[in-house]
Length: 103
Image (cartoon, rainbow, N blue to C red; front, side, top):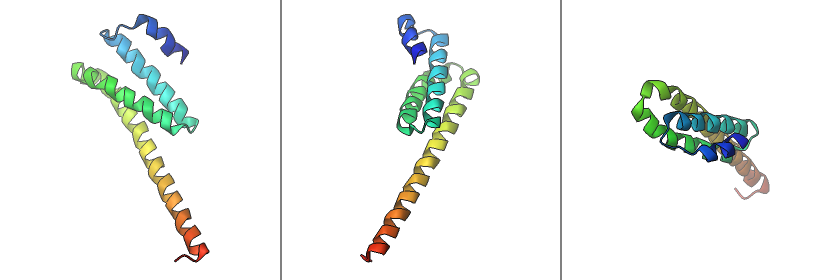
């Protein structure tokens, strides 16, 4: 977070290396939030990464493609986790309804 705050002073968004550094930092933060089970924040950071990567991929797909793949992998992990949590919740709701005799 401190690195991102320090980068605000530089703020040359037209500079490709600057945007690359922001992508890398955001990815690291997204992974940290994922590890801390702060999935909502991790998803927000991934959304920012994809916005930053879109024009970079048009400039040089070979150079920036690796970041896109890494972000897609983390995004897929978040999606699978979300589906798993939804199924788990539905299972418990169904179990609670059966126990209560409502069905």
